[in-house]
Image 1 (tube, rainbow, N blue to C red):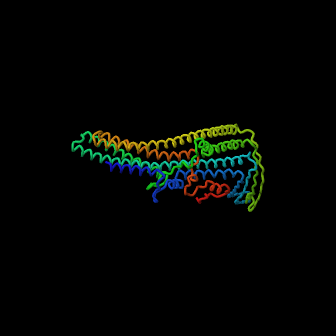
Image 2: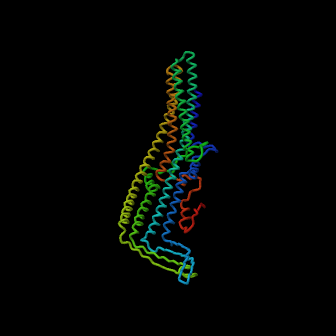
Image 3: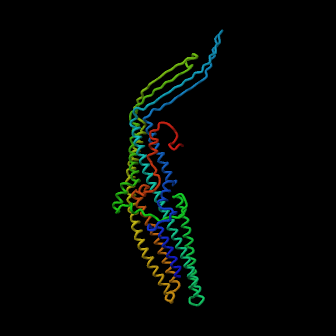
Length: 462
């Protein structure tokens, strides 16, 4: 029994060290930061959000098109056959009237519709960048949790397997003592029941580990092999809760995205209102017609330049209603900023409390493990002289197992909670963590497309 006890303690401490920072991971082991770098580079959800932002970037050239001319070419051809019959005379004429034309339309003033559309597009793009940053935070946080879940569930499975080994030895010894009359059949039955229950817990631990591995694969993109120790993020955190709240309210991407959303809504009000203002434009065209005058081989060339001024008088109330609607939507967006601020503050407070509580749980669990190890050792010694029953030994063994599992869970929770705080204040990023991976530059695609006048090929060649 003592030998098995030492085996169990060695296994649990080996599992706990997986989640510590004092022991270096093997050379071939995957590190937490390495796994996060893989998630940053290849997670499908994150790449989908990047594609969404690239699509949003196209709002800028679309808005800028209002400043640019539109050019249209036209052409037509026909067959005309005319037969004339006069007494004593009959004539037949066949013509092929054709024409080609080119027209250019240029906006001069559109009630500032284009100007405000450009400003709205810019705000949409800035908001999209913050939404991407928020998505990046969520993916990294989920990746941290999946990484730590694999470590936790691996350690718990090792604990359960060692517990089964200990209980199997306990059962063998109880059966031997029953054979010589030292214990009763009841003691044997109690050992058998505890072993069966432990095997069930081992099966549950295996199932939990398989689930954690599948979630890890979902976020990281590959099946975990050997994982190094978890790395807490506490060195990146503010020193106090009050400072964390200030940072979160100032830097969280969800709040910044909502503020840009207010700008978009306010510019949209002006875009709608532009329909109530005068519109001024100019059109120029040139055309050439063949066989159009009724005389074969005739050619007529003409050119025009037309200035157009449109002054709206009454639009049936449509534009007025649309303007009021846009103003209400802008008001709703301002309220959304306040809602987002409250959500961020609540998330910071909650995450900070979880981090502090996890630290206390670790201290309590460590004390419980130490005390339960002493209690188990004493119970076994007392059982040898008949002062304790087999059931007492079994209960002490399970109490120690429970405290060790609690310690493993608390260590996992502390590391994840530190990243939850970093996420809540808006600083969970590849830059903050120092991930060794090529950073995604959200401005690069925008610079590539904002000034494009023509072309359907995307910058990556599609």
